[in-house]
Amino acid sequence: MKITRLTTAVVEANYDYTFVRIETDRGGLYGTGECFFAPGLTAIFRELTPLLIGRDPREISRLVQHLARKTSAAGSTSGIVWNAITGIEAALHDLVGKLYGCPVYQLLGGKVRDSVRIYADSHAGENFESCSAVLTERRPDWLSQTDTQPQAEHYAPEAYARRAVSVVAKGFTALKFDLDSMVVSTGEEMNRPLTNAEIERMREVVQSVREAVGAGIDLAFDCHWRFRPSDAIKIAHAVEPYGLLWLEDPCPPENWRQTAAVKNATGVPILTGENLILLTGFLPLLENLAVDFIAPDIQKSGGLLETKRIAAMADFYGVSLAPHCIAGPLGLLTSAHLCATAPNFVALEFHGQDVPFWNDLLIGDPIIQKGAVAMTDAPGLGRELNEEVAKHYARPGELWFGEELTR
Image (cartoon, rainbow, N blue to C red; front, side):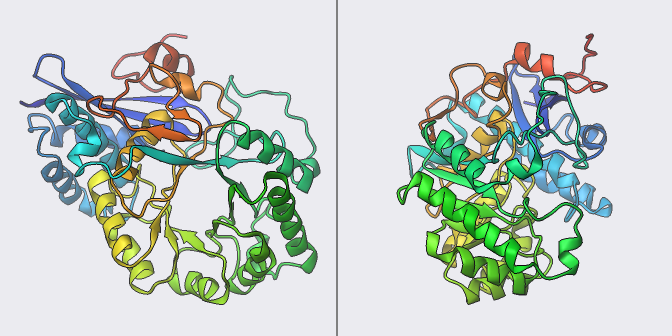
């Protein structure tokens, strides 16, 4: 069996959902994966395609190593080339699972749970977003043009509480909110200490959400690497009484010692890792017991096999797994297959609540039911992209699996 074709398609959602399809000479057999966004990503795929044509798609690990070696001069050990390689690896797993009639989680060693718990990334108020590959705001046609709610109202404690109650009503038992948004606008917060009033406002938000949903719901809050350790420690102490599942990315990720300082100064569990790549990127955090949770993003951390290694090493060090995921439903489902096999897994992120067509991008019923993804026996990833729907939201200027789209 040989790989005969590699093509891509891009959906313009809250972020770009980039899909890669690998076809073979075996009776229409193909696999589809989803990649983390990056500037120029589809151009990278065009460069990688000749390295795969004619190769055996069943040799997944060998092909990933081949791509990594061939692109090492372009910085593949630390750069966005891994976004593409990871998507290719997901498509290969989907293809091989279909070939052998088994789900991807079986290729990863078998599941240790029948469903994967989801935590819902949430925004206060009507704070919808869509960002380009370099995180500049955009307004695709599907995004409402009538979001006129004042910024102050977005970040009022009452808005967080209302949103939390509405998300719990959908069946989620774990939620996450951004904690840095209310004080961050220009990046200048990295150059000055936070004020007592800013920290108190954060505390009020956390208190408001906790009181709204009660003790039975897990809550996490994200700082997006915005703060110095001294300020992050103050934030952690302020929110400590409210029993958080974790405080996410309190400090810039470049120096594990900063994260360790926050972890060691507070009883609030600390999570980080969404921007790290390969096991080597996570080892300093793990070997130095600098975190309580790691959050590899399986769409860019190196793929399913590499994230399996990362999860196993974290388990060895007593660190829990809660993967970052801002993908479409195919990417989330791919991540769920890995999570189903990891003993130290806690929860997987879902970031698509405000994308009105998110559930419609796959054929069949919504994959998230009552706050979890049920793992089925369907071969490969278990679902197919609903191209009839997805084409309506295709990114202008990109080919759709090798074809021009007319609007």
